Length: 206
Figure 1 (spheres, helix red, strand yellow):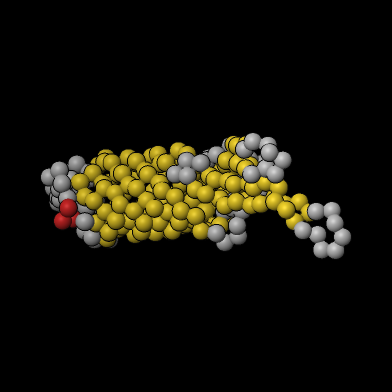
Figure 2 (cartoon, rainbow, N blue to C red):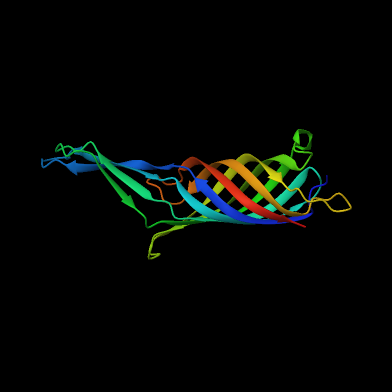
């Protein structure tokens, strides 16, 4: 069975936890000369795992190579923890739902046709790509941009066949990706953070 020429799809995804770094709050001693700064407490933060939506459109250039453009949207929780308080206050955790996150991406797909199964209806693939990230708070007074790079594996299942042996009609796609983020909300400038995503989408092949 030959791969479809064109595909469109949409569905749900899950983005895993991503660290956002840490920062120390310090206080200055009341003394003459050059005052010393002492640690007061530490702030640690992370972007929580969250569900999201995704959509994509792709073209298979050959039976081994495909390209696609996609869009992802989610609203992960921003979690902030305060630890190590110098006055002995117990550790505190805060959660905010004020973050929206969108990603526009472009990917290259490499098909493993030698590993097909289910009468060749299901084909595994390797996905490599990148995109632009945009994060904003609820009233959009704070907006951060960045980039993502990703690599992952998955498979497509398209049962329909035409007389020319092309796959056609409705199908399913599943994939898991390892993502590296640069930019966006973070306590450290130009930090690189990694997380894992998983997606399940319905597809329509032409």
